[in-house]
Amino acid sequence: MHRAVALRTALPIVILLGIGWALLPRRAPQEDLYADRRERMVRVSISGQGIRDSLTLRAMRRVPRHEFVLPEDVDRAYGDYPLPLTHGQTISQPYIVAYMTEVLQPEPGMKALEVGTGSGYQAAVLAATGAEVFTVEIIGALASSAAQRLRRLGYDAVKTRHADGFFGWEEEAPFDAIIVTAAAGFIPPPLLDQLEPEAEW
Image 1 (cartoon, helix red, strand yellow):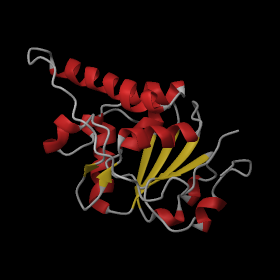
Image 2 (image 1 turned 90 degrees about the vertical axis):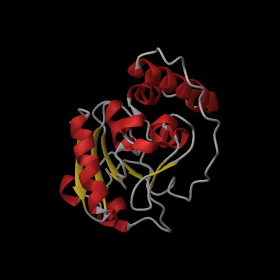
Image 3 (image 1 turned 180 degrees about the horizontal axis):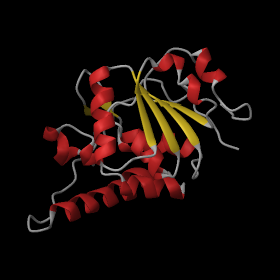
Image 4 (image 1 turned 45 degrees about the vertical axis):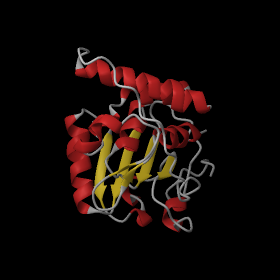
């Protein structure tokens, strides 16, 4: 049985200031540099803070977070803190992304709805666990850029939509899990209606 997260994790996120990762030798190939940084991020900031789900840890190791941040923040992409996006939005800190993913108890074939696409990072992490992901973003420019980014990076299991996430994605319901990555004061009734009847929240 899948567990659903509907706004439980959508409370305002406390910004934790992390310590920047030390730079590796300049002669290291760029992709190796990012792989090393991802591994350290997982070891210190994610499994080091109690995340144990193997699919979640594997996804966090695989998804290139530096592709989902602004160009000027690439060197800070693997620190354990949120970073700014355009339109006043942020990409959540890696630990929060991992925690929200683990709570869903991901498994291949799970059908998940994400409300609040942002840059597409959380959607990519869910897809990397084997989930089929539907993600909704209310800001048109973010929805468009995230869709292009996810296609470019090969996350074909992610379907994107520019819409108000309050109403979910009715024609694709029911979902095994719903994850809300935007703060809200209450659970929108349409989201509860679009969960599988046996899902928990």
